[in-house]
Image 1 (cartoon, chains in turn purple, brown, green, red):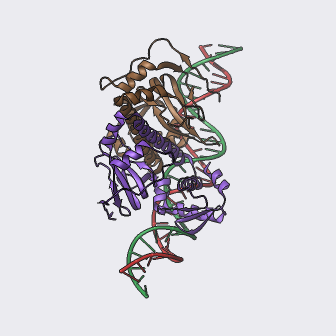
Image 2 (cartoon, chains in turn brown, blue, yellow, red):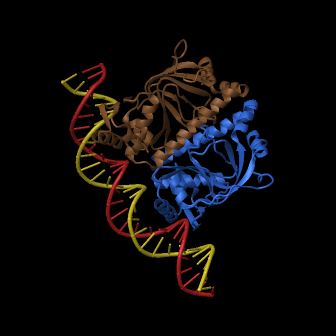
Image 3 (spheres, chains in turn cyan, red, orange, yellow):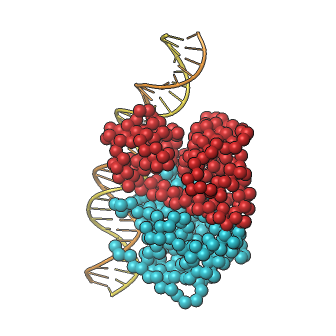
Length: 226
Length: 226
DNA sequence: CGTTGCATTGAAATCCCTCAAGCGAGGTGG
DNA sequence: CCACCTCGCTTGAGGGATTTCAATGCAACG
């Protein structure tokens, strides 16, 4: 399975991204210093063992962070959607890889430059820490899912999370495949598919197509997500 | 099951802790500004929903960070040993709880004070970010375990991690119960116990007592840990 | 219209969980 | 000093949720 990679710098600035709290130093900084780069579907943004040194922000598309076992088993630790920052690793080599789930534009900024700027600009540094600490909280929350939730609870949690993050309340557009969802939820693709079917059978969701989920019973799904 | 809590401020400074890289501003700062507090076994250091505002560093003992589901299912996201910092949450209320695994002394420092100091002292801010980013990397690594590893792989990974962290190479002293290990590894106590027995049967470890593990075949365990 | 990639469905197997009993060290009191 | 209790740990038997293996469906595309 060959990953097709495109790291083509597009001229001009990255497409603008929602900025709900007015001026956000970290994001401003990244927009000013960073360059928008386009990646094809399944394109590798960085790989395990590669040197670190950049901070990434999704302009459009979606990104997955993966960790592989030697025999090919894969765990996706998170999906990143437009506006999300990723690549927050303090080591000098990546211990995880990042790939574009669909064709995406990512704003790439020198991490060293941001860190140096943060040493002068306290507010920037504080925001960088905030973003990282929030990622940490999400990670801990996901551990609860992986360690203790059933398949239907996992899928419901995932759907409610995607619903919240994509802003839409009725229909959720999933950019990722069943395989990606399985590797994110610690299940097999078959179990994910069966669980989708079961949720549809129970009337909690409708599936006009495999990547489009209509939420029918929010409260039941929220309950399942626990 | 009533948790016995002791939050008794002991006079004087915290017991000194290994400081391998000479002066470490973050830790120095915490030693200067922080107060050592003693907790009994199973004592709650902070609970879910409680306000945040402190940074913690283990002086002696061991700490677990937990997340509970409404029906009592529990996931332990990490154990913290002497020298480790925890409590890195950016939200204003804790989404996780912290408890002492055994009687412990924790140095508690105002998070706000550290953050304010970090806005002036770039090096301190950078270290705070580094610690947080390292926690994040560990969390991602643990997701791989929870999502994709078998019971014996999980236990081997845990033992190799404890071996590395406790510094000892031959015998590992486990401060936590089988129950804690189970909730950390996403297994049941019975499976943990059986897997310990199996590793002993296979000659990879010896168990002089349930909390004391003698490592017999490091490379086999490392292989299992993958 | 065949190919290709992804998704769904079915049947059998497996690993881990659940339920239940037994063990052993440590503490307490008679 | 020993019986007895408690608590944590171990072990066994059976069951169940998820995986594995295999086949089919289906939409996009050349």
